[in-house]
Image 1 (cartoon, rainbow, N blue to C red):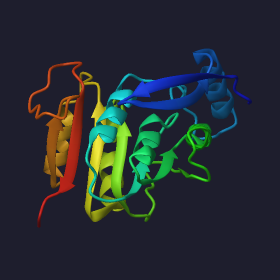
Image 2 (tube, rainbow, N blue to C red; image 1 turned 30 degrees about the horizontal axis):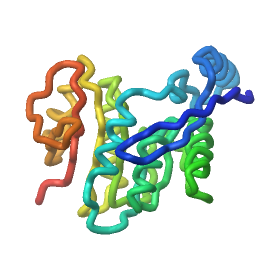
Image 3 (cartoon, rainbow, N blue to C red; image 1 turned 180 degrees about the horizontal axis):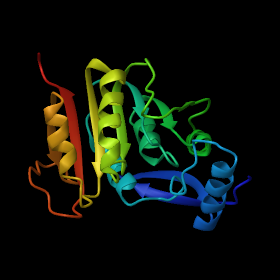
Length: 217
């Protein structure tokens, strides 16, 4: 199925980011129906939306003073906004999603912003790869509590020994369970607000950035 796309220019932290995204949610629903009927496992009717969390996560990435260039992975990349911001910040980004259409469009959007020949990776969190990354970023991937355990296994498998994880989250109803589970699995975690200030007890539907690192063992 060929998606009809519309182009937008986002102003994030003083940077213009050009994106293309599906022109209507109906297209994504039709694509998901076709994929499900064909037996494909990579369908997702929501990957092509511009969720409010992505620009906020991107802004924090662009405002951060990174000491070095990192090998980075955007998980659940969707249309790739946060990953493009990481590219602008100087990182080598791989765009990953379980929906192949998402990976294709994220790589295309990166090219619109001057980042040619970017790498895309299609995989499910139930089967993480052995590739290692120093910086794993994601936005709005904590909407389903059933996905927390697979996500944490993926982070454990794919984050380098001294790497860092950034997950931007809008604060949905079950969101508080993710930090609790991460701690149980041996992660150190800090929650920041959209201004990068500590936010240990964010309110419901308040944006937070979860920063995860491995605890010393």
